[in-house]
Length: 225
Image 1 (cartoon, one colour):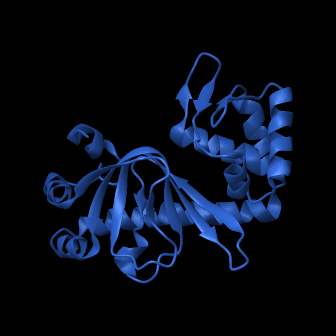
Image 2 (cartoon, rainbow, N blue to C red; image 1 turned 90 degrees about the vertical axis):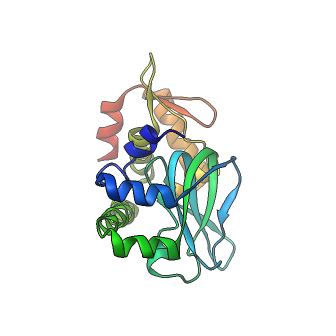
């Protein structure tokens, strides 16, 4: 985990050198495997993580046992930051989707740093604002978009954050099961699979296990509107 990689992540790249050095020195690097749980819904929150590489999903379980996928987070994003402002019970379960490198920081230590380096608050607020913006967009999609439109939009969002160019188009290793992808767009697995099959038959995408290759971005963007 080199400093160049850490410095380039969204949480750190706007910090001045003094603030960066202070918080970087206070954070503990950790490597986590796929399937590991950072924290569970209902636990007391006392720390947060910055993802340097990898993916983490945030999930919520309803009282009747149904599960929903709130978000998929990647490099430069923060996991568990609500505990900085409110050290109450966690509102979601954070599970590692792919081998990940992270930086961990205790809440009490961060509050000490915050008093000395107020610019850290701006970075945290920006992260919260970005998460809230995505949440608002997802809620609007549930009301105004049909399932194929939500699937197309989810694929484009995942591509923007995790995609890599390949000969055929953009390969997106989302690391989600079919059920998790359905939870992400707020639909049944059968309906989402039907949408994926339709996109594939039209030549817009190519399915590849827990990845997808986007072949026709223009068509997907039109369908996502």
